[in-house]
Image (cartoon, rainbow, N blue to C red; front, side):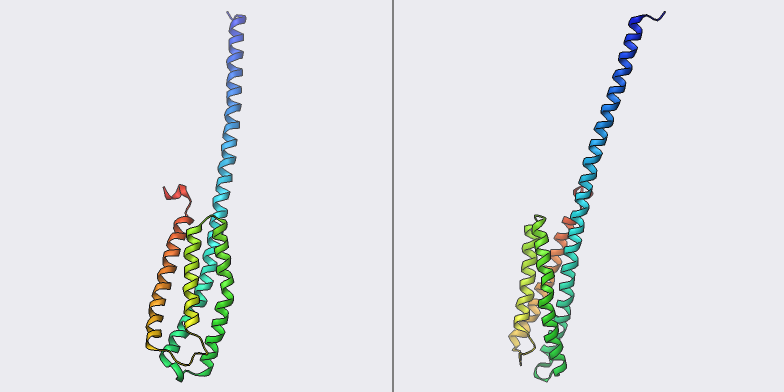
Length: 179
């Protein structure tokens, strides 16, 4: 026989199950919203890192073109044709213009709180500027010391770029994927 106390207990148990189910759904939705927000932040951060990489890539592309012409200039010196000298001057100007992208990359890194990456990128850019100051189209000849210095600076710039991209790739991966 079903008593009033049994019906009361059943209603209380059912109400408790419904309330706990609803609370669990609220909890689940809240954590899903937090997770989706965190994923969006990680995705946006990765997009900004990709933008930084693209900017540095543009600068490095122009630098490589400038370096090829500068290396050719070191080989020929005064016997280098005027048309090639003009091209070196043009690419040197283009290198100066593309440094805007490097400054933009540095600013983005600072915005992301990546001071070490920004500092290494600034050093990379300073080495390129130093190279450009040493070898330019109006220069008539290069000394043996300057040619040797060019090789050292080339290696150093290459190492700086490699270490920058190594550090950038570590920061590019979200924490969950690294573990």
